Image (cartoon, rainbow, N blue to C red; front, side):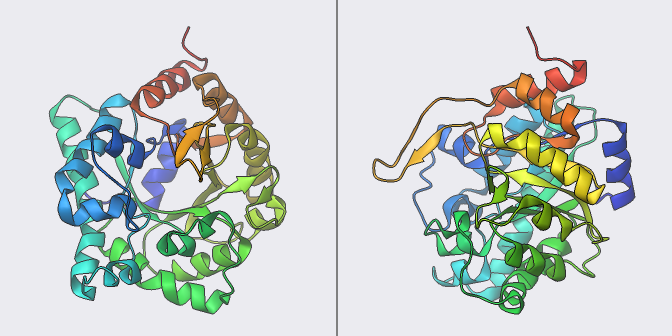
Length: 312
């Protein structure tokens, strides 16, 4: 399956909700892989690439139409700290797209006939720092400095021919502005999704202001939220649709919270298929899950969206 054009993806969105995958890290951890590393899942690009292909395949078989690549925390700077040179790092970024393509090919070999897509993930600057600052933003860098950080890896990802670039878990408007500048001229469409708390970005800016940045960006085919609480999604979806007039993307976490002291998740799961139907009804066109949302949940979402109501 070769790269698709932005027009083809837009047609898919117009035909009905497109189902995204769930959390890649939790799927890898459930298979026994230790991700306690500054590179997180990106470490497996070099050490266990077949594990990443298997995780993507699990989501395609579960009903996802889109696989989001393992490049969220993959950066030239992060790889350099591990002694990986620039050429090899660029190859690993491209490999992240190739592995998702391979998973799509395996899914088709196992009878999946619907269109399958690959979204190349570009996480925020804070993800490279691996200190939790991606959930705060405000790094003390200028928009130009953030653009200079993001552009080289976006070029490497775009060269691999993904269907779309996923500019995801963006904590503030400065980084969004930098990313919107960085994707210009790459020839690959993108979606822009913020990590939010209530009706504001993680850095505290009103979502109306944040979404408005992408309203006139030709490269951006969808805008929305990810890596947030499920209860924050519906209002954000409505705001994104109203402000931008673009398709909306929504893929929150399970609803559990991370206890940094205990290094464990706590709280209850609030992500449900019925919630996902509500996001669709609010205007979302790309719907899936982020941290702690696994294949079973994606199957429930795919079935619920196909029928227009939650199973059971």
